[in-house]
Amino acid sequence: MGIADDAVEVRAHGWRTLAAVHSLIETALERALQGEHGLSVVEYTVLDALDRQDGWHMRMRQLARAAALSNSATTRLVTRLEDRGLLTRVLCADDRRGIYTELTPAGMELLERARPTHDRVLREALAEAEATPELAPLAGALRELEPRPLR
View 1: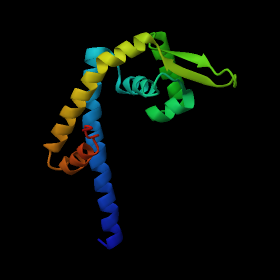
View 2: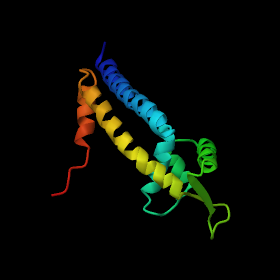
View 3: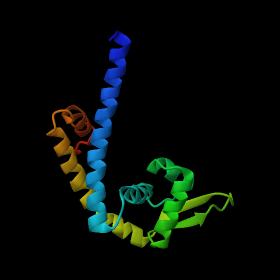
């Protein structure tokens, strides 16, 4: 194996490690959010993204990017969440083609109930990854990205 092959293997190993950590976290979150709150991970992500807008709404395109979904998948997801009364669509006043999405009070309430579950399970999944030798370096790096409390 040459130097170029070694570089490819290093990148592939990094990618496999990232995929394994992602899978571990997503599986744990999916199980807990679905079981305790009736939300999928992507539904939680959408509600959380809208909440982080500080009372503002988001264009569907922005929401698709935030949730890492295609435009059509985002539209279907927004329709499901709208049918559940968790969010609403608003037509843009200055661009009739533009559609905004925003949380309803019910969506905000569900998000507030689900957020502690999400945070707890995320902490637990990262701790599990850190206890797994082949995942520990990446999980440790992720923990380093956590915001530090202000003094």
